[in-house]
Image (cartoon, rainbow, N blue to C red):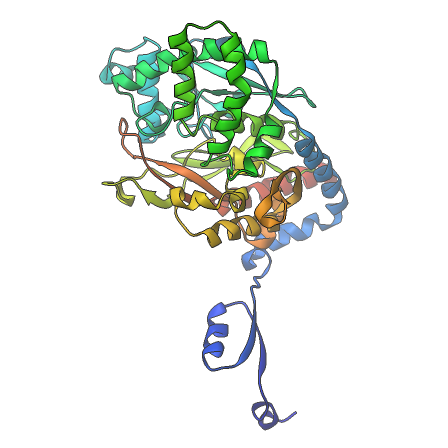
Length: 475
């Protein structure tokens, strides 16, 4: 066909790649369809070669992933009770402080994590003030260890000290357990690095009044199935990470009658109910360990490319795989894009921090934003963004959840089970919605927003996965 024939007819164009070309044609009245296409692995030759090396083992990988995702979907996370951290968390002792994210030592810790540790030392009675706490923290007398190394999770700084009361959550299918502290509320709280007298006083009230009351109520009530509560909360407008209004309300309905039957003094009963009712984020510290023990049920499966951990310590962002649960793959923690409280800006923000991305790892949180469009008022963006975040995550996950359903998507299951290979092939990293801590210790929360996991974590994980599994296979 001669070129004159082409330009003498109406053009119908399919545009691949850069959307700008399609927009230019649209402005000129050309009938154009844009295809959002990218080369595999963003065109990185070394990654494409690694994917090619795995091709002969695809059946093994699929079999392993089917086993892993089934364990995750079949999990039944349930509240067992409460306990003192040193008495119930594996590997905990009087000189061990747990923190969020991958391993990190005092000299590399960010401001909010240092602030939380200062507060933790004061709370435990090991230090009288900030200066003394900093000396102890830098002396080597305290062992700092990731929550994830002890079957625990913690929001933001994630600090767990020996005396703190913790939830005990168990997957009734696998028997795996997970632990998490009780939620303090928003603003100037320990997990955001604040350590003023009011913060310490609140923590001691939680230890001496709130936790014993809840413990007695759980004994009366019996085990509470968190999977059912999360499923209901998603259908009531939560995503169970940064929006927990429905989850907290549902928990109150479950626990209130038992609290009344526990024979508590009237002032104790009223203070406990008022505290939970005034703290819309109370349920976060239940949804997190629910996700943790569910993912642990899928841990340790050879050849599985399921991601079982995403966590941040404010310095590093790290992931772990089902097939290599003892190894972290890290990259610098990114900055969060979001909304700030009055008087604060991006200059005040610490990089991404916290274990709460365990919710996204399990298929809720940022992966379920389409269920909670009102979340955009807290983290920024638009309602359309909330829907698009969820829809995009279907491209990198292994399944649609059979329990966690999204009414706004015609009750489609949430995208569940991050697949390392799909992340690499598609060039899409997981979306996370999160709080923002001030970069300096002692200040607290300054906003909330959205962040993407760094691709480097997944690229390094792929390289290690190929090296481990294929080298073992080839002897």
